[in-house]
Image (cartoon, rainbow, N blue to C red):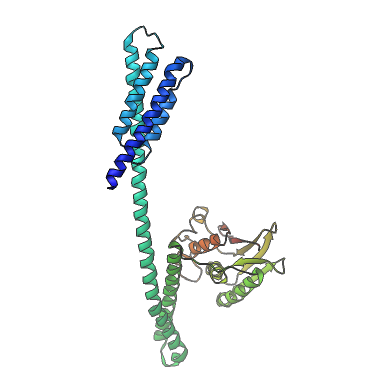
Amino acid sequence: MKISSTFKNSNFVLFIAIILILLIGFIDYITHPEISFSLFYIIIIALLAVIDGIRLTHVIIAAIISSFLWFYADFTSIEYQQIIFSFWNAFVRLCIFIFIGVLLIRNKEKVKLLKIANEKQKALNEEKNNFVGIAAHDLRSPMGNIHSFSDLLLSTHKNQMDDDMTEIIHLIKRLSKNGLDLVDNLLDVSKIESGKLALNFKKQDFISFIKDQVYLSQLLAAKKDISIIFESNEEQIFSSFDENYLNEVIDNLLSNAIKYSPKGSHITVKIYSVNNQTVRTDIIDHGFGIIKEEQDKLFKYFQKSSTKPTDGESSTGLGLAIAKRIVSEHHGEIGVHSIVNEGSTFYFTLPIA
């Protein structure tokens, strides 16, 4: 039923095209060489070739009719020294019409195949995201239990364990924490790639929000004798954002700054408004920096720089990519400026509410 309907539709389209070609041929005939309508034959054939359901035979029919009408209009209005030239011109025009039609039909078929491939890829990507989400969700509970139990052993039975056992439990705790971070990142990636990242925007004081995050990060930084300095020339800047997801952005940028900063250094968090339209946050460290070739790749999934953390910390290569998607969903921008052996400045912007 569908094939029959497509066949009828294609024949109807061919019929309309032939009517238009005949009309162009008639105008070409009555105007003779004063007005050239040659281009219009090509336009009709090109439009015919790109329509769904049209086959090569349809284009050949239209090409034959077009070349004949063009030949007839020329033959009756131009005196050729040798009649063979008029037939030769008609043959060349026919070849050109068919060649254009074949190119457009093949291009149409390639576009159709590409569309089908994209749809299959989209379906596979959705299936992959569902699998990753389910796997990460199922892994999070046992990974969390391992981390909790190792922490419990260290806090309640540390005196009953020798040094080797204590070191092993510390290792289990650190590795399970790394696993939890990876699982949480995979869950975020699954939500982002499947389009399920639902943000709950709320207008609130951005400076106060950042101050809270800085205070929490300072506890982690203290373990490496790193101080975090907060700077802002504004008392309040209001913006609409999802505090849970934006917390991931701040936490990732600050934790990275701590990871890659040497002990005893300091990190500066600077907030300022730009033209009273956006609020910009700079997180400035004095670590080893990132080479120029790697800076553009940092915000892609599973990309890491060649710079190593200063205390053996781990990285999943997902945090900055997730941060970029979250900031983009907030209609902001995120980026980095870095100089090797001088440090890095990671920044992001948000619209001012």
